Amino acid sequence: MQVNDVLRILKVDPLQLPQAQGPTASGAEAFARVGRTPKPCVACGRPATATRIADIPSVGPRWIDTCTPHMIATTKTAPTGAPDVEPLATLRTAVRQAGIEAALLTAPLTAAQCARG
Image 1 (tube, rainbow, N blue to C red):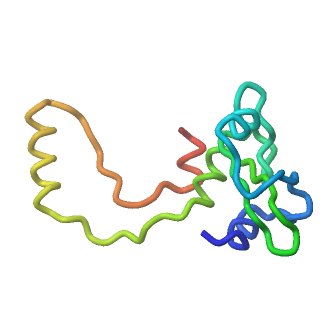
Image 2: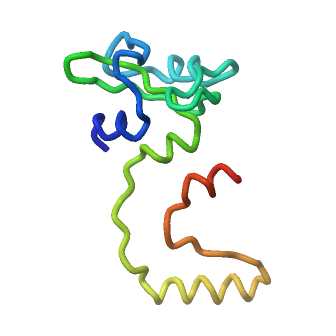
């Protein structure tokens, strides 16, 4: 997803985002932002569970700290097509034989569904 799309979805001004030291972050730097005392989500203020650095044109590298729903909302997903029926039928048979209750999600969850857990 393009950084302009991310900023539009999150409804944030790039100048309000915390400045990053460079275009990439180490695992330790990312953990420091979302670990024991997480930074707030840039969109809603809830504790961030994900972070990334975006190199924003004319602004430079900025941290984008997001809660799980906002991280999901700004994650690029591959286009989905119709599932291949044969592997799904095999999986369904195996699940039924094992006596397991299962559901197959064929569409992304909405923000409301993600918030419910």
